[in-house]
Length: 75
Image (cartoon, rainbow, N blue to C red; front, side, top):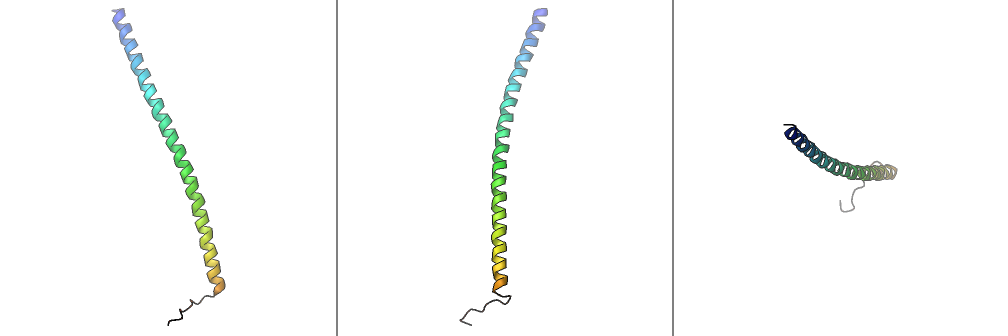
């Protein structure tokens, strides 16, 4: 009887160790993905800031050139 209980406990322990190994691998994969996404977010934030600066530069130049739109010469 004790032998069966010991075998059952050993089997349960083995199953739990396998589950922990899978969970550790899944956690590592998720951590890698979060890290990759964070780098991508930072790159996109940098790009958005540059685009906002470019738009501000264009707006400033348009304002300095005058508020009236220039009529093309063919009109």
